[in-house]
Length: 294
Length: 216
Image (cartoon, rainbow over all chains, first blue to last red; front, side, top):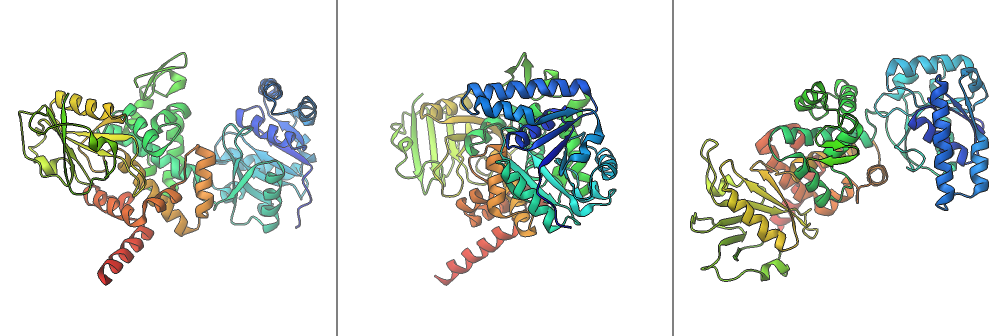
């Protein structure tokens, strides 16, 4: 089936940070964007955040007032999933769980027209598996945005086993129309970004555990020697140690790569409540955003 | 803290022309000796510190080890360098379990006075940077072989998605795949895990280098 041009885009999970960011990229590029979330409160919060972001963009000279108004006018928040029936492309940014994403696409299968492309923003799960419970596996693709989506241009484009060439071409062209920079990857755990990053961060945790050096020395060494903006342990603290475990649990059973297995120290720290910035302590200690321990 | 530099052979940390090599004074009066190149270490307890430049080997190769009780005024060091790229401002100081804290302090002072950034680490293969980054380069080279993405897209993804100055493929290629082979082979000899086994492209590059060397 040849996919028609994309005019209307849906974002599922638009009440979350990633979903809201994706919605901005679509509306800013002139696409009518239906922002679905089951939580009305989440949508309200996201709408305020989006308006705030666009206002700042105007203040900083990145966006005209006219473009700001046009972008906001193209965003249509809704808690009614049936509204997604009008979409040519639906991008999901819901909870990172295979069953949740499969169930969503299965339900959307009965709501959306035949031509609608389903895209998953998953960072770790298989696109082929996510598509496996819907009847349009040829129109399911991975579009993995980086946080914050409204600022980061990169998108990893990952076709599943059954994704058609037409779907790849349409999705690719659409990301470019949004001013994004697509890169093509295979449907493998973590695609490019997380496949390189998650084991690397684990290696840094294991180096702490092995007594090679403390967290501050490891982060300083990688930043100075390699030109990284953030050290691996600062980054794990930022994303959350519990999130790092979840990433490992998504990767390791699929790849059986020992580097992807959660290091024992990581599990002990999470058990002790040291989750990183959000709990005030991880590899560093935090007090109101200030960092100690370096 | 007075120091003297003794250079024997080629130094990767401070190659010929590096300003640091002009620093220091007379060996006899120096409190700290800095041994560059392929140094022959001899214990000298009178000095505050003896700094030994390391390649891929551990400090224990020079000083000997004693079931976890090793340590003296000898401190290992290496300035991180990606192949033949200019040396970075990072100096990894290598300590043993019983290394004299005053020797570490003196070593730090000598290098920081030269405008370098110092981090301390244990005497383990690969120190900090190579231990962490070489498995990542191996993975990227394997992904390239497996067709995950093109080299250009992998590099672009790391630059755009992670804010890296350069991507893993361009960096390891620029540093030299044969040099990557040499480092990972040394790491693999110690750790024995697949992550450190030289990637196929590095093996190919090293074999070509050896063949070309043999032909000369």
